Image 1: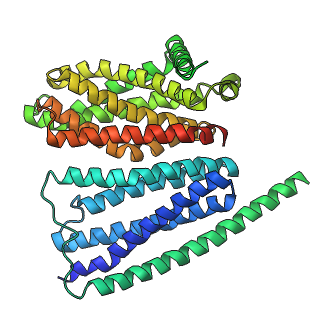
Image 2: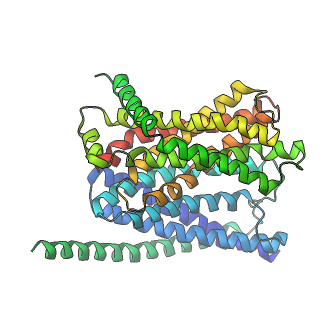
Length: 189
Length: 229
């Protein structure tokens, strides 16, 4: 079934999103330890990239579901838990926009990033448990022979894309921080 | 002052302030009742079969509780803004985690009180026998409400200096509360249907306890950062 090959898109995107969130929580903890704003920028950029990739994962999963089961949304536990995680991380970005003062924003967002990260595994366990009460189609069937290698390649490619996006956002974030700093200095003078 | 006393003083202060003005609890109670009435139009409670009603009872109750709880939680730290009370509290020679626990406990008591009043009303409106397994149901209510109040109190502290705080609080709390509310809904539905806590429901109970333990401990560790930056 050709639709099954959507796996090469949604699985790597999901893995890369998870990696992004791991980087984000690590950067948040580092920020709380060092109070260096560059870690805050890293956490924000990693969350943004993670959220974009998670959205790609959900959209690809929904397209797969439509092709495989003729409905867009089946409450498949993998896609449903990804959606809840996306909503959780969207709250992080909303909090970022709402707080204006940079060091307060960094502290609040670091705390919230840790909260979001801890929520993800609980959400996954809960949603899988919830759906196990009803029969559901398995997203993770055994891979056919010859599939693991391309899956590994596309995962590597997706990680490279994530790294590139992260580098771009990090550069923009750093530039914005410097701009902000100079504006503040200008005001003081 | 030892830790327990600090915790108690903060709780009692919050509860006393609330009972003098009654601004949060009245709004919350009225809101809970309005939601319960509105739901009956959405599902036409008079025609609904008993089995179908039992099936959705946990969900209805916890949505009403979570919405009503937000009104209490929104006020928790905002109440300290006039006269710079929050600065005074932070500067006071008490542990910040005791301050947090005290506020969380006061919110917990208020939200639980709203739930205890809504529950019989819910039972009357929807012909649900909620009292058949009351001790177990009470345990679920306590655990679920504690989860809601811990997350709500820390978000209340996080958003206290934000202009859009009334909007931000629900945006932050509901997504993160999904696993806790899901467990509480599942357990409440089963208990109201007369099912005892067995292997399957026990797993939801463990998940709810786990959620509470994880987020209470992390909040106690991080509250220092939230309040001081």
